[in-house]
Structure formats: C-alpha cells, structure tokens
Length: 432
Image (cartoon, rainbow, N blue to C red):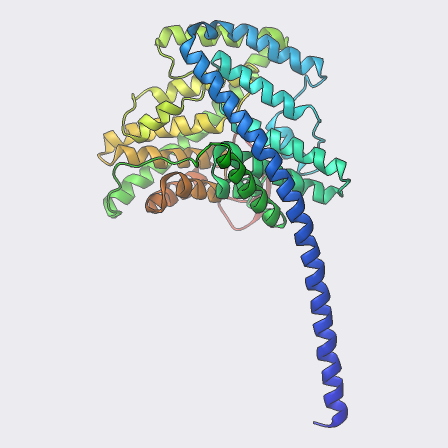
C-alpha cells in the first residue's frame, strides 16, 4: 500500500470514528433527556399512585365495617355524573380516550386525572364492582400529557410521554414494574410494540415502583400451593384451560360492551342510567346474599389461588362488573378479569384433577391476555405475581388465549395491526 493510500484510509477511518462519536453524543443527549422526564414522571406518579391505592384501601375497609355504605350507591353514582358534568367532561371516554391520544386522535383533558381519582374512590366506597387499572392508565396518561404541554415537547414525544405516564401509574398501583412497562407499549396497537418508549417507560416504571415501596406498598405476590411436573397430560389440561379462558374472555368483553349499550339505549339521561345501575346492584346483592362481588374482590382472588372458590363466582363477578361499569360508575376491568380468571381456573382445577391453586393462577393471566390482547405483558405479570416456576404453564395458556380470543377486547380504541392468524398486516378495530 502506497503512502497516499495509507493516508486516504486513515482519513476515512478518522471520519467514520468522528461520525460515530457524534451519533453517540446525540443519542446520549436523548438518553439524558428521557431520563430526566422519566424520573420526574416516575416520582410524581409513585406518590399519586400510592395515595390512590391508600384511598381505595381505606374506602374498602370503611365499607366492610359499615354496611350502610352500600345504600349510598345511588347517591355516589349521582355525585360521579355531576362531577363530570360540572367539569364539562360529560362525554368522557375513559381509557379509550388515552389510547386514542396515542394516535393523535384525541387530546387528554387536564381534569381527567383528578376526576378519575375521585370517582373511582367513590365507586369503591359505595361498593361498585370495578378495578383500579382504568384509573391508573387515565391518571398516568393525563398527568404525563400535562407535563408534556408544560415543557412544550413535540407531538411525537408527547405520545411517548403518555406511554411513560401509563407505565408509571400502572407500576405504582399494581406493583408489577416489568409488566407495567411492557403493557403500556403493547396495549395501544396490538402486534406492534412502541420500542421508542422502552427507555422512558422502563425508568419511570421502576422509579414509581420504588417510590410506592418506600411508602409502604410491597410488591404483589401470590403463593401457588402446588405446581405439578409439566408432562403430556398436564400440558393437555393446561391447553384446555387456555381454550376455555379464551371463550370466557370473549364472553366477558361482549357482556361489558352490550350492557353499556343496553343502559344507554334504555336510559338517555346519565343520571337515571347510573341510579338504575345502582339499584340493580343492590337487588343483585340481596339476591346472592353475599358481599364478595362488590368492590375489588382481592380476598376472593387470594382464596382462589389457595384453591377455594365456589363454582359460580366467575359468572356473578362478570354480571356485577358489567352493571357497574355499563351504568356509568368508574374504575377498571383488569382486576375483575383477574377475579373471573382465578375463580374459573380454581373450579377447572377441581374438575380436571390438576392443582386448583395453579389453575387459578394461570386462569388469571389467561383472562388478562384474552381481554387485553397483551401476551408479553401477561407473561411478565405471571413471572412477577407467581414466580418463574409457573411460567411454562402460563406461557401455554397465554398463547392459546391470545390466539382464540380473536379481535375482541376491553378497549374500543385498541387497534390490531398484525393479524393473529397469519403473518400479514391488518387494521382491525376491537369487536364489541
């Protein structure tokens, strides 16, 4: 090689190294920027999430000691409708609005966060059958959107901030930080992960979880009493449970959507609609003579994972939740889906002759996957809630439930961009 050739090669290498260094510095600047935003959102939603969980716990405990709280269901419902009306948010679409905002189809109102916080606590104080994750996604998305407006971030980064807030709030409230990060990136567009949000979602989720733990809220965990060896027979029974959970998830989603549609058709007034739902809940409670189907039902989920559940519990929970949310009360659907999956799985385990405790656990994640269409988040939830030993069973039911649940889902604004049945791009809306 001549001296001229060596000199030319040297300058080419030096130019490539300089360009590489410039790219690295630009990416490092981006990393630092997202770290600052993520830490801010994580700390803020860690405190707010912990306060929200505490309020829900206080409301549930107070209601358990004072049975007259159930009689406040009509008044509580009227208060919720009035709050949304007086704040000019009477056409609230809840979590669906958050998902729509990720496609720049809707702007999140600033009053969304305080409204969903207060109205969900009211729902649980009076005994409405609902969860907490709807509030988590709305709290996180709304507050992150406010931060984005304050710092005047561009539109694409605004959507990333909303995902970051969703993961932080979900992590603080459910205490499953890995699943929270994945769920936020997975739930909006099924089949396509929003990997551009991976760094901020991860940092915000871990930060919010750390803050919540420091405030006295431990990581969520369930103890499975018996996990048999995975063989042909147990695998076949597990696959059958996944099939049943897929069908049950479709039934649950259809029941929720149709009940909401029926209430709107029968009662044009939001006030009359929610009072009617409240009265119906009270009548249903008197008929079943049990308080198990009001509120979150966390103790029932724990009993199911311990192998104890009545065979009809999953059916009643679906009905109570459909009436609560369809009538206009606020809350979420994921914890009720845990309840339905756990109690159905426990019943299946007793019938099929396989560990009811294990079946309750994998029933929870199978129902979660079927109603949210988020298989990776479901797998992370199984590892965080039940430990790695249950993961092979959970993976089987998650795969089957994801495939057979089709294009049904909890959220009307969820979109399917990759087919569940073939390697092709589609654009399906959620079936109702």
